[in-house]
Image (cartoon, rainbow, N blue to C red; front, side):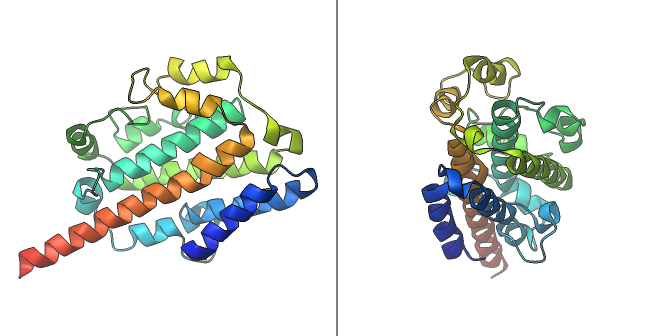
Length: 231
C-alpha cells in the first residue's frame, strides 16, 4: 500500500467509522491502516510498511542524531508516537495498564523519560536520543501495536461513540505519561474532546504517519550531508 492509497483509506474510515452497519468494515479498515504505520513484524504481513521503509538501511548513529526541520530525531519521533498510542489505547480506550509499565521497557530502551516528550527542547531531544536502544524501542512498538490490535478487534459500535471520563484523563497525568506543563498538558484537553473513534482516527493511525514522514526527512537529510562530506 502506498501513501496515496493509505490516505484514501483513512478518508473512507472517517466516513464510515460511526455507522452502525459498518462497524466490522471500519475495524478491518482500521487494522489495515494500522499495520502500515508499524513494522511488518508487528502484524506479520508480507509487505513493506512505512516503518519498514524508514528503518531500511538505517544505522544507529543516524537514528539517534539525524534531525528534521523541526529539530526532531528519528529516535524521538518513534518514542513519541509510540508513547501516545500506548497511552491513548491502553489508559483511555481500554482502561488498562500502559505497555511501558508491563515489562521494564523504560530500562530496556534506556530512556530517561516516561512521558511523550512534548515539552523537550531541540537540545533536550538530542540529549534524550543519545543512548536510546534502537532495537528495544522497535520491540516496544511491536508490543504496543499488537495490544492495540487486540483492543480494536474487541470494540463495539457503542464503544466507538464513547467519550472519556475525567478520572481516566487525570490518570494520564498521575502516571507521568503526559507532563502537567504548558507544552504538553494541552493533550489532555485535546483527547478529552474526542471519542474512541476520534482516537483511532488521529493518534492511532494519522499521527504515526506524520512522525514517520518527519523521520524519513531526517534520514534523507543525513544521507545528503554524508554525501557532501565525502566529496
